[in-house]
Image (cartoon, rainbow, N blue to C red; front, side, top):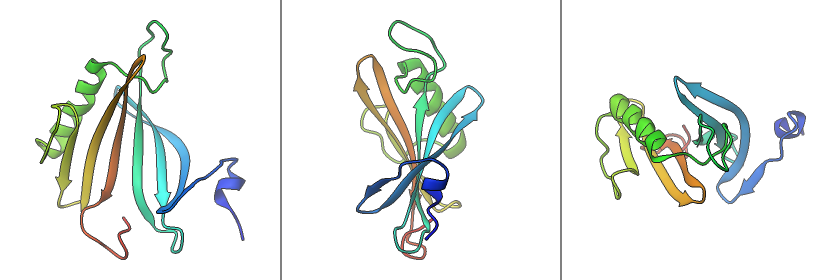
Length: 136
């Protein structure tokens, strides 16, 4: 069987809910991400897209492109999500948030964790309602 991850030189991260393939980087204006696609193990359908936010700034101990971002960069990302999807349906900290995109059938989550030397933030897109076994 042909293994796309192997052919691309990638090592898939296998989990109970699918196979993760880190395929590419993505940029939208000042926002830069590493993108991870999660596919269903049986059907191969797309189940989740995760975007790990990367810094544009050089500062002590952090090079541009690292996954440790500043609170200012997080606010920039959050404002971009608010401008696209309106205010989040829920937010625990005023930084994290969950948005419901009814027209796109997605739940969008912004998850931030404080780690030295900064914050690690991920945006995840998952199906809002089950569509063919929960795939996007």
